[in-house]
Image (cartoon, rainbow, N blue to C red; front, side):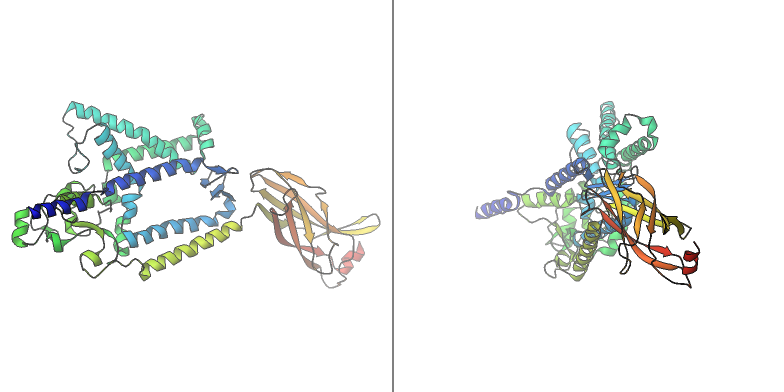
Length: 481
C-alpha cells in the first residue's frame, strides 16, 4: 500500500503543473507571427523599423532612414543575422529550426491547426507519421479545403514578407493598379505558389534535403550543445549505428534488465521529420522537442523522469557534469556579435542627412574685369540629395585656410534653394575672389578649401563638409588680363 502511495506521489511530482514544450512553442510562434505582421506598420516620423525599399532606394533601420549610398550598413546586418544563428546553434542546437523558422511555423499552422484541429483530417497531433487517408471522398474534400485555407494564409505571409521591401502604405496602392506593377504582383504570386507547394507537398523534406543549415550544424556542435537527447544509460541501447537492435520492451529488458524504455515509440510517431531520437544525433532533427514532450508524458505516468531530455552530450551521454554555457566558443560568438552590433550602432549615428558630391569643371579658372576690379572665378558642379522626409532649404559656406579667410566668396547661387525629399539636385556653383591671393610667377596656385553645405532651417543637424580646391592663376596670366 505504501509503495502505491509513493508511486502516485512520484507521478504527481512529474506531471502536475507541467506545461508541454509544444504549448510553449505555440505561444512563441504566436509572438513571432504577430510581431512580424505588426512591425511593417510601425512608423516614427515616416521611418520604419526595417525597410529595404528598392522602389525608393532607401534603407530604414531602427526608424532611421538611410540612402542607398549608405548601403554599407547591410553587410553588418547580415553578419549579425548569420553569426547570431550560428552562435545560437552552438548553445542550443537547431533551436532556430524548431522554434523560429518560418518553414516550421507554417507547417505547424497547416498540419496541426488546419488539418488536425479545424478539419479533423488527421486523427491527432501526436501522430505525425500517419498521413490522412485520402481514399475517402470526405477526406478529399477536406484536403482541398485545407489547401485553400492555407493558400489564403500564404497570401498574408507573402504580403507580410514584401512589406519589408515595399511599405504597406505603398503596397496596397500598387495592388489597386496591378498592371502598372507587374514585378510586384508577379513576386507576390510566385511567393504564394512556393509556400503552397512547400508546405503542402514538400513538407519537412525541405528541412531534411533542401535547407543547408542541417549540414552546417555538424560543424558547430560540441559536447555542451543543448539538444533533444535520448538517455541510453537509463533507457537502454536501442540502436547499433543505423541498425535497430530491439523493437519491443521485452527484447530491450532481456538485453539490459535495468532499461526503462517501454518501446512505446511515442517519441517516434510524434516526430515531424520521421526520425527515431533513440538513434542519437541526426541531421534531420530540428530540435522541436516534440519527442521530449512525448516521453515526458509516458514516463511521467510511470512516476519516472523522461528518457528524452533537452540537454547536452556531456550531461546525458558522457555524464561528465553540468552543461557549460560559458565555454570559450560561446564567449567568442558573443564578443564578435557585440563588436558588430557596436560598429553598426556607431555607423548608424554617422548618417548623413544630405549627400553632396563636388566636381570641378574642366576649366581651371576665369579672369574678368568687374567694376575696374579683376575677378578670378572657379566653377563647380554640385550634386546634392536631400535624404530627409521633408523639404529643406540649402546653401553653402566657403571655409578657406589661414591667410585667405573671407577672400573667397560665393557668386552663384546667390540665395538658398529648395530641395525635396529624395530628389537629386544639380547646381552649378561659382566661387570668386576680387583680391590678389598669390604672387607666384612660376605656376598656378592650388588653394585647399572646404565647402560647407547646410540646411537653412536645421543648420545644427543637417550640415556636410566637402574638401575641394580653388585655383588662382600665376602672376603673368593674371597681369596680362
